[in-house]
Image (tube, rainbow, N blue to C red; front, top):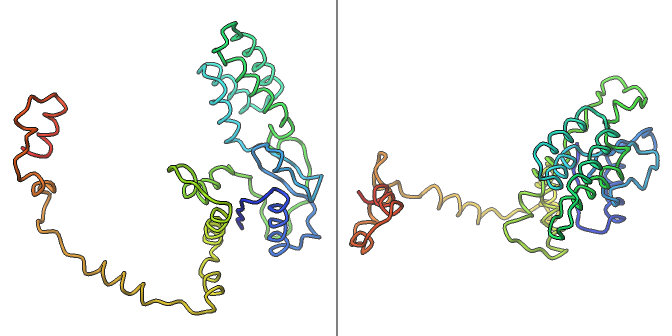
Length: 258
């Protein structure tokens, strides 16, 4: 499996992805493509209109949780989805949306339920796994095994999300693209080759040696055994101990001072 990541416009990304496909496979001999995605319009396959589209199951579960706060409704919708009954599931969501309708403008339950309905309805063709739609595809050549699509979001999280999202980070387009290149080349086990190519085959290792030497020469702890690692820090007088203490203050004292 090969991974590619980018922060460019969808057309540019598709072109880059297709170039990787052609580098790895004989693209002219591809008979059938299967796409696992989140239902976003940009994900649609521009190179093959006959691509079989499957909605990533993680995103379905995620939207159910986001758009329905009622635990019972969530359970019913998930069970209908897992039972591969998309029409019954969509009908249930409509009924649920009507049941929570309110004149209170701050009550957004109906609005969210209808958003869920539209999301799933717009991706109706991908709600059932392609293997269970009666679709016939060419038999696998000898030595090739067709595998399931897995959960795409899990792969996204492993490769890119944990490094680039949250943590209050902000990225420029160029910076995000450069980091993405490092991450997907690392995932593809091409990072060393890429670094060598841009470094003209020469990698200075003096700095690396200094870092290793510094780390290996780190001093051993002054005290062996479990002990209390904070004992040196708590050696001086602490005004806190003379004041009235709450239960949490007493717990702090018991843990780090007594």
